[in-house]
Length: 426
Image (tube, rainbow, N blue to C red; front, top):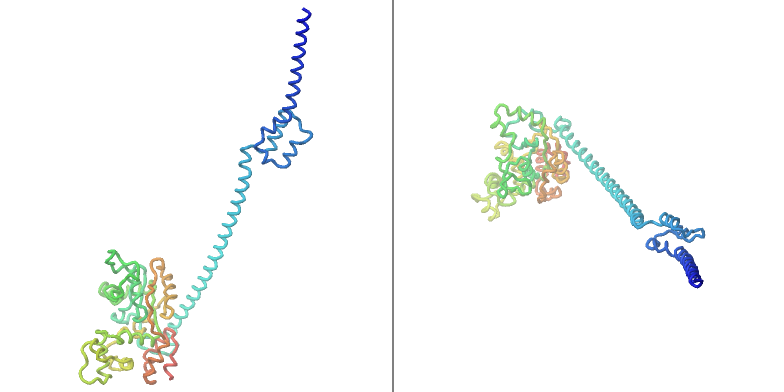
């Protein structure tokens, strides 16, 4: 009995000793290793302050305090994945916004400069138009002491046959007076597109592009509604309707240096075979002033082949011949503009010049509010220039040149073209 009791006491004491060892050993191991392993993945993201906190001498190896301290000082997996990217993304978005603001500011500045430049050009164009219109008013009122037939007559006194150059577009409320040899083919093409008066055979619809309109068709008078045709449609109401349209519609014409226009007309109609003009005018010039022996060739082709064709001097002589004026009114290609378009009776809103065709055409299309519908055709320009005058008139006697100037002086004065002194005094 004494032995067994001794053994039990020894077993109990040994067990207590082992339990005590286990408890001591567990505290040492847990206090050193447990919490650092739990947050190992977050350690690279810790700040220096967080690192110093975990190694502080006041650190206690209890379960709750270090866990609370680490969860406060060290971002969790969820929070760390949002915190830094959001800050980076915010900086990027701010930079992008600043760049966009800079771009918008630059665009605004460029737009402002363009608008200012456009306003400046428009203002200059408007001043030029006022100058041209004032010049017409001065001449028509008699301030320039230039007299010409019809200067003081009223619009109602103009015969219908002399109103055939005033083309009317009721859709856009436009009236265009066309002057031959002053880009009238292209302006007629514009009027055809605006009035939708010609169907394209390819599309079966009205032309929308002036450049696509065949130039040989636009001179067909049936395509255009002119004042001369009003009496057929409206009878006794014609003049009343004309007056209303002249009052409310936008009216324009294009002009050119009168002598240069004459040279251009001669080159176009008599510089190469033209059967109609040879038969009606060329043969008359040759028979009257050409000293041609025998009978003239019947056709322009035969005449040109034989070297028989009117000269510029014969053309000028024909224009100045009183017999010509008695026979009929001048052909439209060399008829004075004041006789074609009646600027003293029709108050034009826009006077364009062939010499500034491109800029004037752009300005006019904007004024008409049709620049979004079409553009002016960029066809080949007529090459006849004012610099040619001296050569073309070199064989014409000075007295004849001055007489010719008197014939076209109203156009020079009305439309502000300088007197051609180099032609008249040399």
